[in-house]
Image (cartoon, rainbow, N blue to C red; front, side):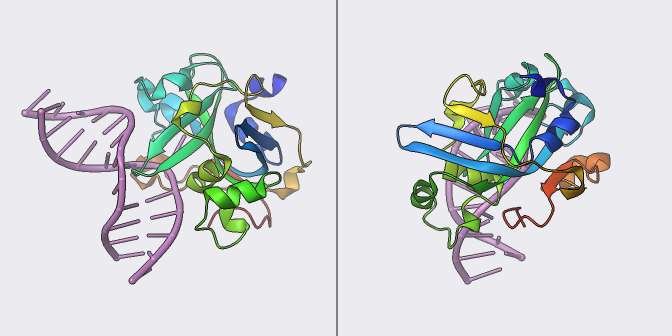
Length: 191
DNA sequence: AAGAAGATTAAA
DNA sequence: TTAATCTTCTTG
């Protein structure tokens, strides 16, 4: 897919409105991507791969674009990312929020705490839980297995807002980089 | 081998 | 504001 040849910041915007799909034994869950964050590898202090840090966890970030990167954080949450950029350049895009499409009943089961449909997927840990993503999905290739991405809503540039990323206060000069993108007025965006 | 911190969430 | 909770990474 030529989508994966885009620079990471462009891909982060291009992903908005696209449909993310997970197929497993429990059926299908899917949603439109409404919020993303770009992490630009070696030069980005907020990225796990800052300064080309290469460990078992970050290894998948060095592979070709279109791979899935999942990691565990804060002792309780899985975050779902899409690897981007050229081979050997450790860049990735964190999916921060979805607008549910299919499998909403299944999502409600997985996230019994959510009070309404919006709370199902309006945060990185929440969407992973609702969609059923786990650490086992790390290293999978999009569209070659049970995790797929398709054209969805058509988003025009006017509807895309950018701002600083969330939860990276330690990142010094990178704290204010406007690498977070979301769809204007979409109720499923986090915060 | 052990300890600290973290791309978060939910409840007080 | 804070606890929950555990992987990853760093240090000794």
